Length: 194
Image 1 (cartoon, rainbow, N blue to C red):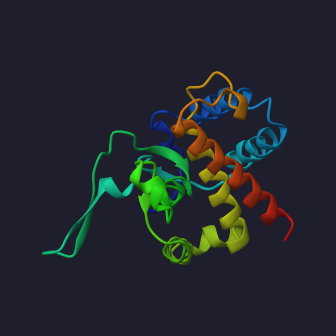
Image 2: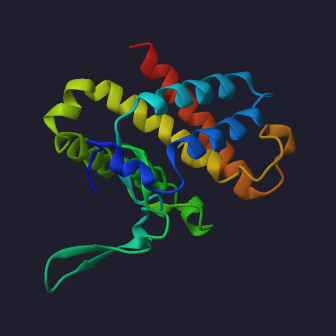
């Protein structure tokens, strides 16, 4: 899955980067009533344009990864959303939906795992980035990119709302992903202060 863009031939994947950026602008408009969330999502959009690009599964969740114990091979399923996107998209999607919160897990909002396993996963992924990519990214920048993309992943789950603010939330689903987005804003701000 770590196949980085070296030429323009990868730009033919759909939706192309321009369409992805346009959809992010549409989402940004829905955040106007929450200035903190708006500013961080706007920073994400700027950073998204600068991030290294790679072929991304775009639905990489544990349910789409099978492990064959006989051959010791992993198989990735459900490739209908494959496209060119940020190098951190799949990693964030995979990590963002893990939670040690059993109540959320029982409601079907997340996959259950412990925080230290997520951190190990992130450190391992970073260690496998190519030297060319690592020249562009410190581990701190990698983690900022991760938190920004997690924010995007959470907001995508409630992007059907006409406005994204605490006042308009109605369902457990909406509150859950909104709160996770707010937590990512806090993590991004904390990372900026380093």
